[in-house]
Amino acid sequence: MPASRSARERKAAAEAGDLANVKIDVGGDGQFVYKISCRECTVKADRNWSAYRPGEDNGFMAAMDRWIFHLKEKHPNADAPCLAYLEAAQQRLHARREQRES
Image (cartoon, rainbow, N blue to C red; front, top):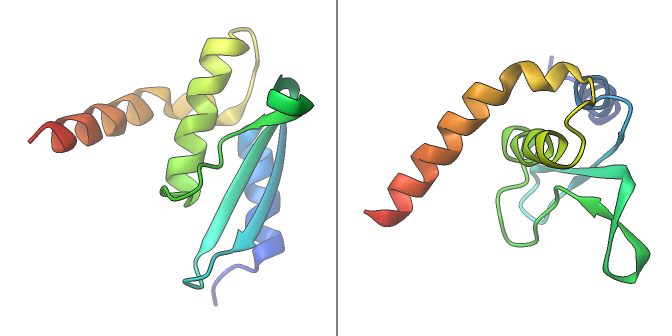
């Protein structure tokens, strides 16, 4: 039995750490859309920074990778379980860039 949306949301929030607000919506294609936002960082119009990117992959791995990079860049002393996957996130980013170039 697949995990419910609320169970997935709790798991993602636990992985993302204390600086994250995590919300999961269902996209037009019926897939889960992960929205991870930072409790401290703001962007234009005083909105919180978010890993959500309209028109891009917003599944768990893509959103969590963007969140990991945000933590490393803006909150280098933050402690979150997801930071254990930094090397894997960097490898996925490198692979995506190579794929775009070819």
